[in-house]
Amino acid sequence: MRKVRNINLDLLKVLACVGVVLLHTTMGGFKDTGSWNLLTYLYYLGTYSIPLFFMVNGYLLLGKREITSHYILQKVKWILITVSSWNIIVWLFKRDFTVNPIKKL
Image 1 (cartoon, rainbow, N blue to C red):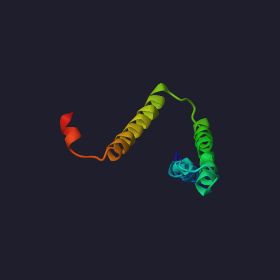
Image 2: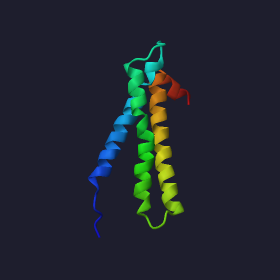
Image 3: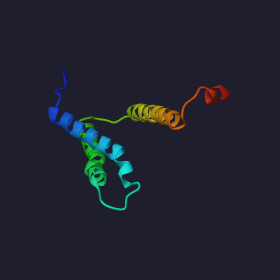
Image 4: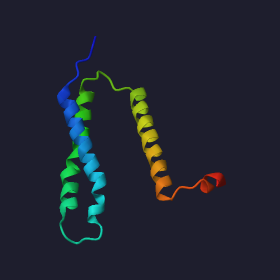
């Protein structure tokens, strides 16, 4: 049995991704300014993305008959790997990466 893909859900996920990018790229808009500016406006414009992700994923989970512990552990594992990987990448770039700190480990 083949699943039917709902293009509207894909569109909502794309919009949510754009919102997350807005959130992360405009966080610096709050620095060095006491006034309302375009970056602050774009930041608040992107705040819809987090609830949208939760709603779309909740809708997609409604079709499942049973959510097993294996399914939950698989999702948590994937999230932890992704977040940890990006944290390491950001940490390396923020520390002016050189090989010497790695040799000390």
